[in-house]
Length: 608
Ligand code: GDP
Ligand code: PGA
Ligand code: MN
Ligand code: MN
Image (cartoon, rainbow, N blue to C red; front, side, top):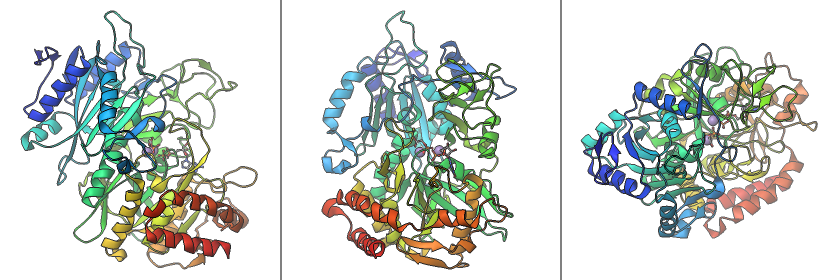
C-alpha cells in the first residue's frame, strides 16, 4: 500500500489528473483511515461482503436457497428517499424551479463541508469509477463515487457498470466525469465499536447541476446513496439532457412482440412503487404475446438518424420493491432473485437462511425474523418486511431481458405511458389526441404517495411525468422541454402517448383491474391503436377504448366490472379539474401556451 500526499494509505491511484486531485482533496477534507480503489472484480466483491458480514451489516443467506446473496437491515430511520432533504443548488433560485428545494451552491458547500470535515475518520474511503449506460456508447457517461460505505460499493457493483475497465477508459480518453461524494456521516473514534448501519440524523442529498456534481451525506439508503441512479441518471442527467436536446426520464422500457411477430417498444413513467418493475417484467396472460425487459426504472432517450426517439437503460441492475413481488404476481422477478448474487434490504428472514416479505408466497411462513430483527409470526400485528424493502439484483439475471439491452443505441420507442396510483377518477387506459395533449397528461399526472419516499403515504399529489422528485432543474423548463421536443421533431415519428391506471378501486375498496400479467391486455389495445386496428371513443379526457376491443379472453371479470374500470367518471373529473388548475397555476406565466390551451379544452369538455 502506498500513501497519498495527505499520508493516507491507498491501494491504488490513477493517471487521470483531475480524478487524482479530487480524490486527494476529498481525502484531506474527510480524513479516512485508508483509500481503496474499487476494481469491480468478483474477488473484491466477495471480500467486501465478507467484511460486511463480520461487521454485522450483512447476514449471508443459505447458498442452496439464494446463492451468494445477503440480507441486510437499515437503521429504521433510513429506509427511503428523503425528498425534503434533497436540494438542487443552482446559482439562481429560478434554476431549481418551484418543485425543488434550493440553496445557493456556496452556502450549501459551506454547510456540507462542515459536515464532511473529518466525517470518514476510522473508515475506508472507496473510489468507485462507474459509467451509466454503456462503456462503448458514443459519449460514455462517466462518474466516480467516493463513499465510506462498503454497502454502497457492493450495491453499486450490481446497479452500475463499475471498476477497472471504466477507470482505464477514463484515463485513456482523459474523460470528464460526474463527481459523486457520499458519506454516511458517522466517523469512528479509535476503538469505537461501529453499528450495523451507520448513518446520521442530518441528511443532505445535494446536486450542483451546473458543475455536474453530487454531494450526499447522512444516509445509506439506495436512492440517497447509490449516486449513479436517481442523483446522476435522473437529476444531473435531466439537466444535461435539457441542455443537449435529449431526455432522461423515470421510465421502464418494455419490448413487446405480437403473435404476428411485430415488436413494439413501450416506455412507461409511473412514480416510485407504482408498478414499473412489474410492468417491465410482464408475463402476458394473452396467447402469443411475448414481453422482454430493456429497463425497469430509467430511460435515456435520444433521437436517432431516422428521426425516431431511441431509449437506453443506463443501469446494470434492478433495485426493486420486494413487498408484493411474488411467484403469482411477478415470477420473472422471483426467478431473477433465485439465481442469487442479490442483496436484500429490510425484508424479513427465515431461520433457515432465506428471505420473505408480504406477497412473496400466498401462505405466510409460521415464523420469521422481521426486518427489525424481532421474532415474527402470522399473528404479529406488524409487517414482516418494511413496505419499501428492496432487492438489488443483476439485470442480466432476468430470464426475459431483451438482447437490445446491450445495444448502446437503444430501442425506438413506439408508445409512452403515464400512470399513477389512483383509487378513483383515472380510467384503466386512454390515449392522448397528440403530443401536446400527451404532454398535458404527463404534466398533470397524479398519484397517491408511497413508502418509497419518507413522509405520508396515500396522499394524492401531482407528479409530472413521475419526475417530481427527480427533475434536476426547473419544472417549468422541464415541461417546456417536452413541448419543444414536439415542436422540433416530426410528430408522426414521435411515440404516441397514453394514460393508464392499474389501481382504480370499486366502492368496496377492491382493485377493479387484476393488474400484473393482465396488463398485457391493455398493452395489446395500445398496440392495436398504433396499428390503427381499432377505433376509440372521443371522451372529454381523450380517446377511450370500446369495451369490446379489450381482450378479456380467460379473464374472470364480468362485463360490468370491465366497464367500470374503463369508464369516464364525469363527477370525479369535475372534482379533479380544480386540482389540475391549482397545480398548473403554480407554473405562473411560464406555463407553455400549449398547456393552457389543453387545460381550456379539458375544462370545456368536462364541464359540458
Ligand atoms: P416501481 O417502484 O414503480 O418499480 O413499482 P413495482 O413494480 O416495484 O411495484 C410496486 C408495488 O405495486 C408492488 O407492491 C407491486 O406488487 C404493486 N403493483 C405493481 N403492479 C401492479 C398492478 O398491476 N396492480 C396492482 N394492484 N399492484 C401492482
Ligand atoms: P422505484 O425506484 O421507482 O422502482 O421505486 C426507486 C425510487 O424511485 O426511489
Ligand atoms: Mn424509481
Ligand atoms: Mn422499480
